[in-house]
Amino acid sequence: GQNIDQPTEMTATEGAIVQINCTYQTSGFNGLFWYQQHAGEAPTFLSYNVLDGLEEKGRFSSFLSRSKGYSYLLLKELQMKDSASYLCAVIDSNYQLIWGAGTKLIIKP
Amino acid sequence: DVKVTQSSRYLVKRTGEKVFLECVQDMDHENMFWYRQDPGLGLRLIYFSYDVKMKEKGDIPEGYSVSREKKERFSLILESASTNQTSMYLCASSHSVEMNTEAFFGQGTRLTVV
Image 1 (cartoon, rainbow over the protein chains, first blue to last red):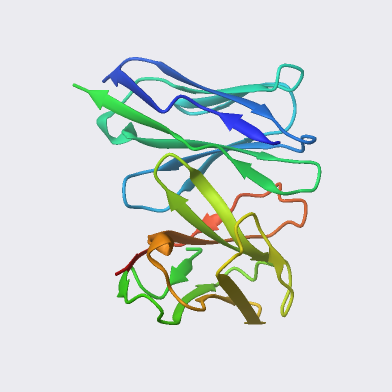
Image 2: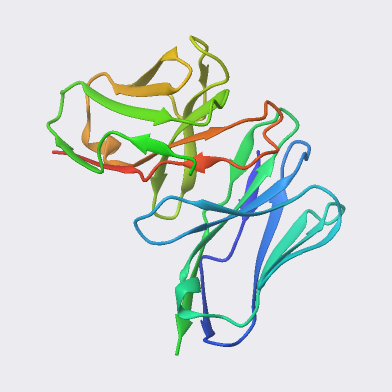
């Protein structure tokens, strides 16, 4: 079966750095997304990785290792507004999106 | 500003009722999706459509049907609502057949079946 694993919940301090991991076992791989979802709101796009390496976009970076079936989202200089769920999603060999259950990130002052 | 609009933010329906959830996108996207989101389970695909009048079953199509008569509109139908269909329903659209472009989501419909 296809599976995406993320931690259920993480806590971090305002101003700090946090890394949210995502491991996947899917039938093929054609790309990986990270989305942010604030409570009661729709998911919004953060990043897309298809090649190995680090993609940086402001305070957020996303890393991919296809050989390890592993990605992480790195959030720097955490702000209270970063409190949200972070969803990892993989495009499989049939061009279907497989979603993880999401990681709830709690930011404390 | 791109937009995916769902017809209702909150709905309460009775068991056995036929329920229509409407979704409209203004981006001329080919792909449209209906998901349900439940705590601890992530997004689960109900149905998707990659063209007008085309539909494909997702992972959990039982108890649901869809309609796409126009490119911009994708409707989800609960034929006979049951309490286990109480959930958050999210509509999304995207451009690429290869799925490698971002999906835009509607604000969600929280459906309660009593």
